[in-house]
Image (cartoon, rainbow, N blue to C red):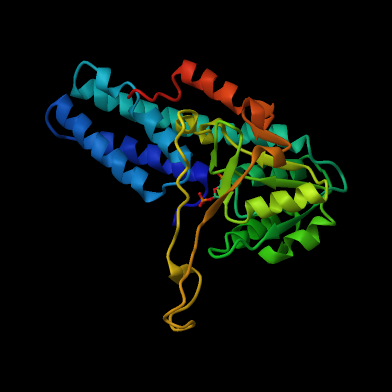
Length: 296
Ligand code: RI2
């Protein structure tokens, strides 16, 4: 949890594999590929929900097995990981430019948790001189909303912190919702920080447009093949302090939830603003480009 945000997690994972390859001084290509796979598995186990990590690692190891020798395989991982990090950072910038066009003077934006893709849009809109205000949820239990409000305040944006249960009340004032994504499935559903789906329901009820800000490497190719997204559950110490509740009380702490495609007005990606129904086609194109490679 020291690295937060699905995009940052993916970049950190890809960079870690790049550093692993840089520092590797083992023997044969086979040794390297075996150790690389172990490193990849260990990184993957750190956060099970965000597919961005899987895609970042996959992009880094792609093609390494077909290199002619250990040096070639090592070089390929170093280059691929650097290319992924660059592509990922550029994607966030492109999303900011596309999404900022959706912000108009007078908008009251509601956001949840801490998404660099969503905040990039708000900061770009501010840079362009647009006048709008933001409400940001606290996002229990980790309270990533504190990061969000400070980041927006530092950018000179008028921002108000609310507790998570104030979402439906505040939705009456909101004109748009912008949230990030940890994973998007082939049928256009959004997996994001717990509480996102209740934001979507409240937005639907109040007829407020609900925008998801997501790089395409948050699209999960595995869901195309029927796999379910694993929802990470975290420890009870994140929810209560020791001794605060009776020993017999259980704690359930899922940290992500799923929002069906029907509640999403558009997904703002680096390849454009798309409908949730277009996710499958974009994924097929990425697979064709070899960005998502299930074979390696
Ligand atoms: P960016 C965060 O969760 C939030 O759920 C956020 O919406 C999502 O990642 C995307 O963040 P976590 O992965 O990639 O930190 O837009 O648990 O920064």
